[in-house]
Figure 1 (cartoon, rainbow, N blue to C red):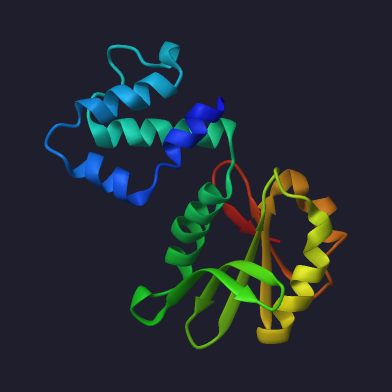
Figure 2 (cartoon, rainbow, N blue to C red):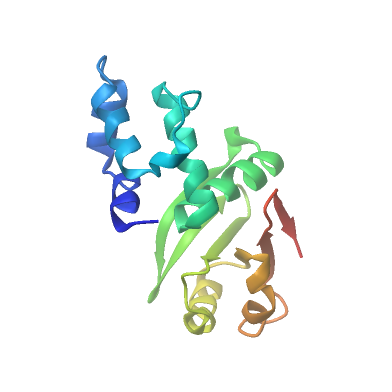
Length: 172
């Protein structure tokens, strides 16, 4: 995946909202097609904007497991399955001491979710967890199943572990 592909997917909210709500979406569609692999774009593949965005997301899932994708999986496959939205709030990128929590779930008990992707270094995890336990009592690390053993080296036994597998999230 090229840097250009990643940059187009990470377009800022203003530009994305403007392009995606416009009556003329052909420029946006052309741009995404330009930055996604053309050989994957056959005549029977996405022509509508929503389908094209879903196709782009699928390319990211296959080639670039960014924190954004982990957050989507956490929300859609875990939080929505276990918590009611009417009494739950999520905080994104919440600062605690010298660290920044990826996601905080607030619903009577506060839960911290620290995401560690294939692109992250686990060496920072121990000081991050120490910071999180200064403010919260439940802390979970969410990582790919292939990174579980290496991640556990940096986690005390009372830290929860969520694992991303290709089809879902499992608790370990």
